[in-house]
Length: 457
Ligand SMILES: NC(=O)NCCC(=O)O
Ligand SMILES: [Zn+2]
Ligand SMILES: [Zn+2]
Image: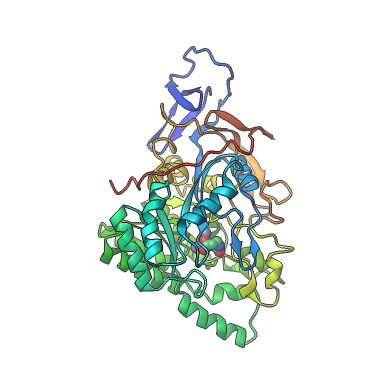
């Protein structure tokens, strides 16, 4: 790979990148003579480590349907967008074991991914047997466990259950990931809305106010402090929640948080689009009033938000979001985005919200460290996997469902004009995307057993 500007979280340098097999062999002074079978011209472009999307939901069962990307289609779309690793959520169905859940997710994903992948585990039953099995999951390379303070009757865990799981996480060196919304209070607001005949998609946002995300985030932080467990707050959307994370981090507590592109670029106004259009934007936590966005960008700059993941959870507008016409509570929750995270965050660089290095850090390096993949992933350096992206910072593109590769019939970012585009993508040394074409193969992606959170060492 010749002529590019190699951008790592630690700095940018003009260098040629020599790949041998699946790994990066050397960074060379530009033009240093070397024999190579194939040369990728990166002149005038950035060479960055492949993106790591630490929060996706492929083929995820939800409300009687399933998210519309399979591991094959979703990981292919991710590759198009410069993401070379995903970490997806295995979902424990109530009454089943964590290890059988892992088997189930392996059966879906193994041999079907175009890029490398790992799993987190959603714990739905907090009982003696699940708590015991958390250690076996960690041994199997899955040491991050998501819990929900929302969705009573489905995934919801009580404070007592959260406390127990956190104690166990602390014991085995695992991290608890939290969906922090006060689901009990939300259910009351939802019941009131339905009783008053308020059924449109915008009600999804109005019945999940940001204060209830702030409250749940504070509570999760308190429980984590009491148990000494590290906490990773997923899909943080509200300024109130960010305040709580900032305060905890200022005291030195091991609290980390991610946000998602939808919370940086979309707002409650989108949920309120005319007719049933708003259903395209239903996810939990909901999109917030636009004023929250500046706070989230601030959090990304100050590292109070450490990671940007997509929470990619696509449901087709025509057949799946439709399930909630006339009752917003039945709209499957989730927004597609795995293909556009790198490009959307690059707009932050273009607008001066974040530096070039910070873009790489939040999209690749920190997720690699947070989820035990560094230095194999997340860095352009000798010895690392040759997961590389040649990024053209000056190309222009318009996002559209007509041209995206995700298996979903709409784009939440339809018509958005972006500066910058992924040009070439390598996954472990194989060219998987080259200009206008996909050259990868489903089945190339390997399961990644993950080590401990490297911020805790
Ligand atoms: N976020 C969302 O609405 N759907 C995916 C499941 C989750 O992350 O809570
Ligand atoms: Zn969640
Ligand atoms: Zn999610």
